[in-house]
Image 1 (cartoon, helix red, strand yellow):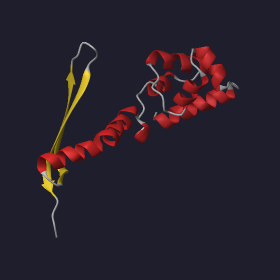
Image 2 (cartoon, helix red, strand yellow; image 1 turned 90 degrees about the horizontal axis):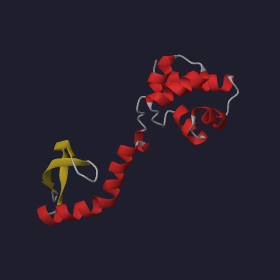
Image 3 (cartoon, one colour; image 1 turned 135 degrees about the vertical axis):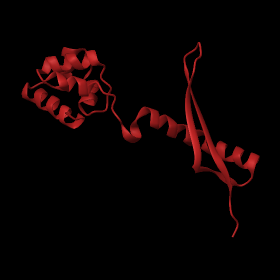
Image 4 (cartoon, one colour; image 1 turned 90 degrees about the vertical axis):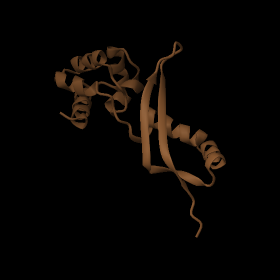
Length: 141
C-alpha cells in the first residue's frame, strides 16, 4: 500500500463515521490541525499514534505503517526549507567571501563533493555539512 492509498482509506473511514477532524483529534489526543495535516500526508505520525488512529477508525493495521513513515514534503520539507533558508540568509555573504578570497567566479556544482557528519555537542548534537566545489573564474569575452 502506498501513502496516497493509505491516506484515502483514512479519509473515507473518517467521513463514513461522520467524524470531524476535531472529533477524531479528541479521541486520539491531538488537535484538529494536527490530524488534518497527518491526513494530508504532511505530518510525521509516531507509530504508537498511528496505531491509535487506525484502531479508532477501524482500518487495516498496514495503514498505520504507512502513516508512520516520515513524509517528504517537497519544498516545504523542514530540512530542505532550512537549507534553502541558509542560502537565502548567507548566500550573498558567501558570494562576497568567495570573491574576496578567489576573485570573481563561482563554486562549481559539477566538480563538487558534499559530506554530512554528526558533531556531538553537550548542548545538542550538531549537523556538520562540508561542501567542496572547484572554483571557476568568470570568463571575459
